[in-house]
Length: 188
Image (cartoon, rainbow, N blue to C red; front, side):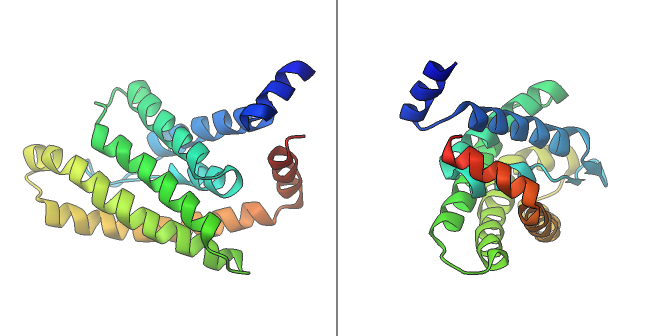
């Protein structure tokens, strides 16, 4: 077991990090595909990005992007949705933008760092990129154009971002969670 862990440290990933990423992938699928609230046939409110934000904040943008892509693809397969490469790219972009902004914004307050990381990530990835990916489907099935879909998604993700920011802040304030995150980051 020690030999495996030493090899993983050389690659930059530990067993604890892999387990955390797998857990966050599963949680993202559950929150986004199974526990999401379907307001109408075309409006689904979910917190699938909450676990991705946690990975972005704790392990960085690349690992968060891996979680986002696997969660999107596996979630679509499990729910029977058609895989949309543009939407999957949007999930990846969300993780990368959020992770890079959080990493490089040096603000003493976590709320400012999270806000600066999450809001632009949602706007660029969830609202712009994913809306482009979904536009033809919604136009063909619901006769809803890009502008209307954009406005709906902008509203949904503005509210979702606020909930996610406060949920992540709450989780990061927990001493038990902070202790485990520090251990995972240090490779213990």
